[in-house]
Image 1 (tube, rainbow, N blue to C red):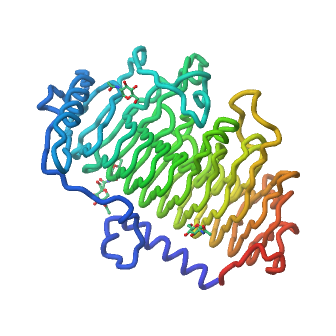
Image 2 (image 1 turned 180 degrees about the vertical axis):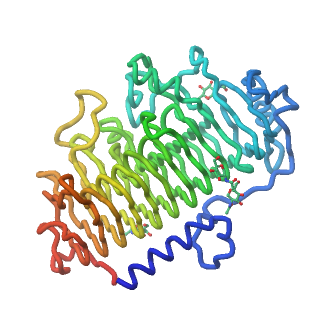
Image 3 (image 1 turned 30 degrees about the horizontal axis):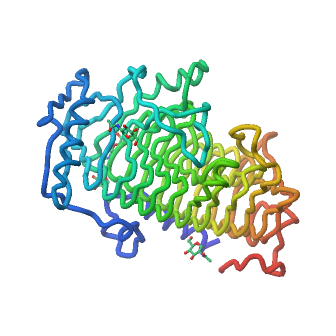
Length: 447
Ligand SMILES: *[C@@H]1O[C@H](CO)[C@@H](O)[C@H](O)[C@H]1NC(C)=O
Ligand SMILES: *[C@@H]1O[C@H](CO)[C@@H](O)[C@H](O)[C@H]1NC(C)=O
Ligand SMILES: *[C@@H]1O[C@H](CO)[C@@H](O)[C@H](O)[C@H]1NC(C)=O
Ligand SMILES: *[C@@H]1O[C@H](CO)[C@@H](O)[C@H](O)[C@H]1NC(C)=O
């Protein structure tokens, strides 16, 4: 118990004073994955006609300045400075070797005139838009085939004004899939830090087919009832590191994905080497999620020092029949959950299919999941693990987990089926499918 309490304390000590991170000598960080750049060439959006009065449209100013950065190719790249003010704009593309820098008080705000919002092709690993067939609306801030891009500043805001899109979803009048707030496709060496993202129309930050991406010290906010406003979704991407961030949205805070059913299986691009640490937040859905789109496979995920308040599910690994792919070598540790419907959920029947062409024999493989040092208060159901009859989940290893406090008629015990692995120091006790010893050889739980 002592060790347990002290690890929780340590966790708070690490999370609370974000400002003093540098003072803590042994804090592990994302540094090294993407080199930080100082740009000597600096331009301001105002030099290109940008007006931060909250009314003037700045779409042409953004396009003009990005064109200038792309054409001039200043060695060492260019910093685009956004001074304090509210810059209303349509969606725009970034280019390589640039820093988008939002000063304190700078807001880049999406237009609410959605009639001419650009459409782009569906992602090949999804075969269609995620919510509507066909193409999808381009993300508000978009990057395709880029490298060496930084979005940073002094806590400025990128505001998607998503309400108009949420209402189209609610009224079922959406023609195509809603835009993400920021999306990078086929890009490398991306840093996103010290920015506030708010009211995304759909997912907030979506790196897809990317590698070497660092997202740190960001704040992501959307109302708890805003549909599908996932925080950060690393998708068919590798070497992604997310840390020191606060996320409160209407859907999963961080969800690692890799494509949808037969399209994701054919595209075959996994998400791998994903680190998530020191993330705090709230959501009616999951805190740390893998899936449910995992058809290209998800492996080597480490999530640690996560603090979750008022949650649907704390940790959620989800896949489905027809997905194929795999979820393996996932470690989640040092998680605090307060007020949740469920602490841990691992399930093989989550999410819908792109169309009727999915292969019902394409069964996902879920193998090697370690969840340790999880402490929850007022959690109605500690957990459930439901594998697939023809593809049981194996090597599911739980240790040092205390998820209690749920009271009253809604309190439910653990439920398990089609799963094997081990459990040590888990209270309340999970299920007979998980052994207390290492006799299956599936778990090597460190103590
Ligand atoms: C922005 O990028 C998208 C996708 O790569 C492309 O279709 C579109 O033409 C670009 N728009 C501009 C203004 O460059
Ligand atoms: C986090 O972002 C805030 C606001 O931009 C800044 O004041 C603070 O120094 C940042 N912390 C780190 C560790 O970068
Ligand atoms: C950054 O902005 C967010 C949202 O407005 C706020 O919650 C946070 O305290 C700010 N951080 C700093 C260091 O100013
Ligand atoms: C499992 O994932 C971790 C990252 O969480 C990584 O360090 C380790 O090398 C992976 N193990 C294997 C066997 O790939």
